Length: 234
Image 1 (cartoon, helix red, strand yellow):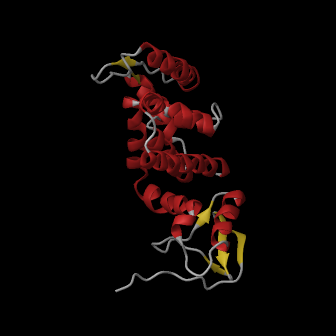
Image 2 (cartoon, helix red, strand yellow):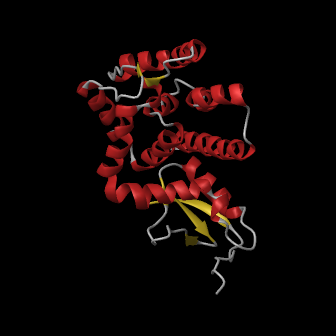
């Protein structure tokens, strides 16, 4: 049996204030999440972006072309009902943050990591009260409980929409500190993505690029940059 696909039935997409934020309407009908929750956006800018995705659909609705709608749905259906769990998952990255795990050799890679990542550790310590320590080798790195608590508090202070975007940034980069540097405008998203790729880019320089891996990396970079844009619009 062929999979059922939603078809475009509307001719006009509009945005209007509703209780709690901004709503998106298809010929006057409010857009809802897959589980039928009202899709209420926190800002007009974000609602306009979601509306533009719906307006761009032709024939069949293609969810893969609607990243803002997907993230908004995630905020309402995957974050809000289990908010404390999501905060815990995100905050846990601080205990094994990418930028704390350094190579033992070669010296050029060690130096590149230090140049790229040490300033971020300094910033997290000074601005967030979360001074993480870096180490090398395969053994886990013990971080100070106070530093991890400070990172957890920073994450917990975000609303559901920001948490949805932050989760994307952290999961794609492997670094809570890099993700927080983006949302605090300490690093622009493109620079932050490059900082998360120090190890991979080093390997490519030594051994060359793989076409399939390059395509996957390009997709992850696109998603990372979009998550940063989504967060900014919240």
